[in-house]
Structure formats: structure tokens, C-alpha cells
Length: 162
Image 1 (tube, one colour):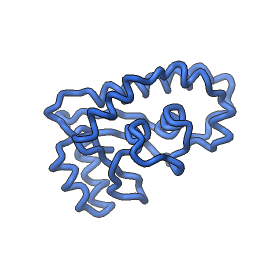
Image 2: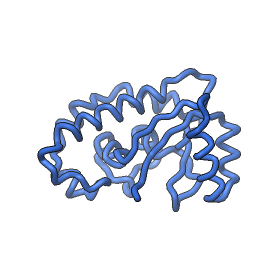
Image 3: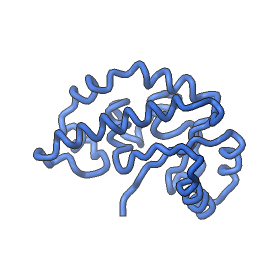
Image 4: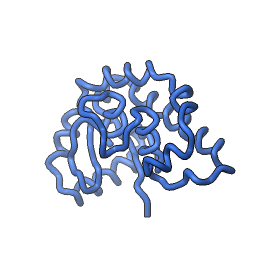
């Protein structure tokens, strides 16, 4: 079993509703969102922690409050810490999207060695596979592009929640 990240664009009202659910209710609602063809989904799979590390230089446990790059991956508000569910209220989406567009992700990624990920114990534990390094870097580039794109989707879906 692994830890996966999926990001769903929802309304502020839905985010508030999610905040009232227990963990089982959150899991059930996430499954419903995943199956809903009308909900935009950004799937980072297992690369969420690595993406956070490239963007911020920190692990998730060391994430700085109100850092828009950290919030892009972790969220601004936490709904359940045990299963790591968070959201981004609509009033934060524009600032976070702007911060993502300013990032030279290729340069940030190029500045890191796979050993940096391993030393920081970044999930998933794949950093000792030199034969896969090009594929891992390409996947991180794709994940970043998907996340940045998801933050600039139409404003009728005002909140991004993960």
C-alpha cells in the first residue's frame, strides 16, 4: 500500500462540507469525486512528497506555514491529519497559482541529486535506482506541469482540495 495524492477542484461550500466529515466520510467522498466525470482531477500518484521537496527544499513535516509552493502540494487547511486531507480555499488559489508560474521547475530539479531525495527520506523510496533517474525526473516534470495546470482551471471551480 502506498500514499497517493489526488487533487480535486471543488467549491468552497464543498470544502466546508468536507471539513465536517470524519475520516471514513472523507474517504467515501474522495471515491465519489474520483468517479465523477464532471470533477477535474490532478493525480500526482506517489510523487507528491518529491514534488514538495523540489519546490520548497523541505520535507512535508518541515513545511512552512503560508508558503504558497508548499500549499500547492499540502493545502492551506487540514481536514484530517491521519490520512493527510487538506484543501485550498478559493481566496488562496490565485496567489498559489502565481507562485507556481514563477517557478523554474527544471532548474530546481536539476539542482538536486537523487541522493538529496534519499538523504531527506522523501517518499517514495526510489532514489537509489540510477537506471531510472531520467524516468523519475521526467515524471516529476510532468507532475509539476499537471499541478500548475490544475491551479489555473476555470474560476467556476474555485477551490482545489486534496
